[in-house]
Image: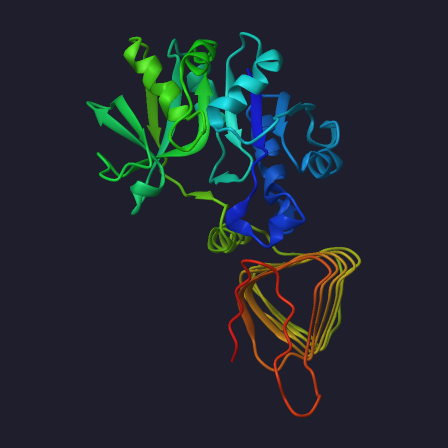
Length: 354
């Protein structure tokens, strides 16, 4: 089997971060989401992987390289425009040939991985296998309709969903999907919908299997989802102190301090991770926080947050929480008089002012 990872798209739900970077490279526990996807595929026995890329192709390729770091071979597949999931399958056809494959959205995250599902599909004669997950808002997803445990219909973002079973962004297909993607027309959104291709297979009498996930699944396309996924990943960390944590610090729970990091006169309450080269002084870093490499946090408090590399948080008088802070950002306490808030904010930013 081959892997087809989708890493194009505009990432509009994660703006302003995606104005300057690929959404698949936003880190969870200090590792890009895309890397978890590649590691999951390799752990499932898939080492020939194509990555569909768009405007951020250079960033994706610079981060993932030729795949040797993950134990796989990567092929980069340009997609001229984000024309839908079925359009991505069309773009990947020369790479895929007639092989079975897993299509894995590069910003999705599944607990426990897909190795068992890969083995099941390899031994099946089904044209496709869909992973499903029960959601409270099925109208926001592709939704599957089941009868006696078999898929009898799928619909993209229905106004009146027939079930609460959302299609997870991980799909298993054999070569029959290619005839389906060539047969369908763009939807009202102007995209080639994978749900339309799946319906084509159903109308052609093909067997499509389903598996409902027991563990958690997160589509990390929004800030709130990123923080939730970060929290879940951090919960699985094991305590490891490789950096320099001074004796005047308090360390509680599963805390990871990577080599080259320095912490003094501070409290670390896990689960959390501190990246290499980061310096923390007289601060509190609370649960579910991920501080990336080469950051500096002084006289400040942080909890349930993602802080990307190169950022400084200096003498902030109130705790920062439920926050996603980008690369090379400076957050500091101003002592200027009269007191005022001075903001430089990009489009789609959100700021809570105390």
